[in-house]
Image (cartoon, rainbow over all chains, first blue to last red; front, side, top):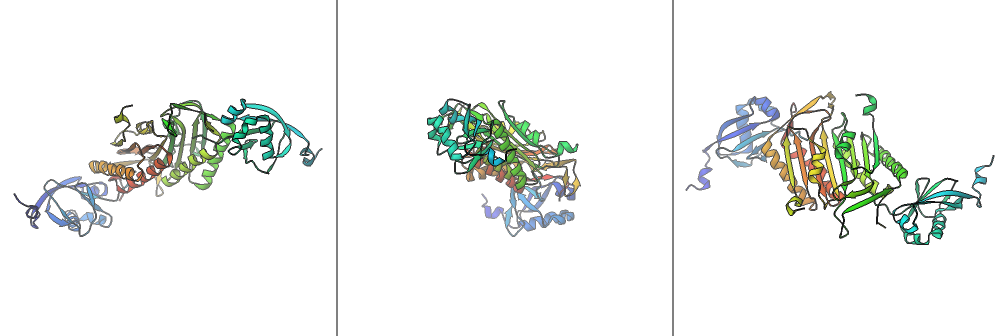
Length: 97
Length: 97
Length: 136
Length: 136
């Protein structure tokens, strides 16, 4: 059995689903895609990885939050662990209601 | 032509409709009646005239307001003028809604 | 839509018929409003520890209507953006779970109609001559 | 009425169908409640000076549902007497005057449901991942 410290080692890669909505989908041209990402990274690093794939996303940088496994995370130094099959979503400013 | 001072002289009498609702109607046994009253009197005097006709109304004394020509008047020293055909209503505590 | 249809409406109704929330919301809907707030008062199955099967309401009808109109006037003074106001009160027997009163108010933005509905039902209970049978 | 039928309900719906205020008010009606407060958000004919014919909504559906459930949990912590909560949001095209969102909340007394509805719609707009098409 591997302990969780091993699973979250810095160089592990996870394959996650990234979902785009509203302006995010407009800018990337896709609603979802499968992306290989480091298994452990800060939320701002996670965002920069997505910007690297879709440079047009940069216009959202000041306005966006992410959701990891359907929970909000702000763009900051907070570390998140990603596992294969996890859902990451780019959440532009909400306008429901 | 008589001036209004003459019409409101202390000994003039007006014939008004008095309406009773809810607990007021229960206590008096009537929903409405025609009553001769002084044409000018305070609202507390007006109430006491009605209590004289229907002594059981006294249980409402601390809780009641009156309406004269469909406008509320508190029981107090305020003078009201009554004209023939005016509508006076006994308003027990409201419980609509 | 013609000017008449969309000008502010004060819709007041005292009725022995069952009330309908669809009727109320439809009556205050308008194209320039993004918000409709509503309050529905229903007969509860208990009051001060006693079981209730139904309530019976009576009103001093013409004065109740004029007091409801005064509430509309106050609402328009306090929340000038309010568009349509509908106040309905049922009279006679109202069984448990059925509505005795409905208020619906529309406004361009939600804060105004939300605040106005609360003011409306609070004021209605304090000023409109309507009674439950069997009270003081 | 059986215990199940009358135990507190959190009714959450995302749908492409037209919303109905009768459905919402009926779904939160209960014998022990004297108050139902509702909010209906409708498509307005203008936004920031521009004419609007219709709006189109999309949602991150599973997360929207879980955020709506969190709102229900918060409401029950803040207003423990609240009985039933119904939150519905329409998706896809919503023409002018039609409802994009409906909230209905019942409580024994009116203050709780009035306050809870306001909290509910404010929080929904701030936390539930739903978007109007064409926005930022």
